[in-house]
Length: 238
Image (cartoon, rainbow, N blue to C red; front, side, top):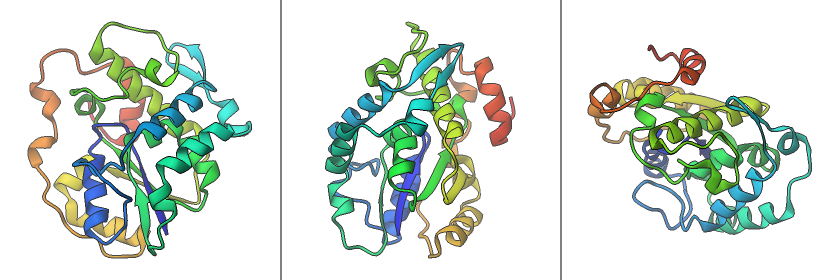
């Protein structure tokens, strides 16, 4: 079994990476404290290659047709396989990886590895954009957008873009959505749902209730109109 986690940086994906590791899933090596497979440079380069195939239409809309139906760039495959070599070479019966930049290349991951068990990790975007992440400026990954000097807005656009990638990609055979807030506040039920999906018991890890709703006391703007449709779909009130 091969597992990967989809979700923008600061979506709380470290919680599911740590859960899988504690449950006996080999998550590659080495890992950083966030449970990311490192070093990340080959994944970053793969994401830059991927980004050059995405066309920006304006008004927070991107055309993913080339990455959904066109050939996968051989250089992308080389960099991805270099990044994943400890996972792909492992003989572990259950293995996987986590790094947020996987979301940036998800359509090609889904085409290369249709047998993967995908876990899409979702978090309230108002919490997701509070802190900096390497994917904050999409231009760093050759993705065009209406540039802004407002860093909070850049993070919001990055969140929107990565949400659009997921929605544009045809659903793979194995697909499960989990909200970070449910993992924090309903861990037993959430792990039971994941067990049903993956077919094995998952270990409990410590979760911090104060990680939910941090946006309520944050300074500055945290809500953007282009969040609303996705927040409705994910069950977040605004």
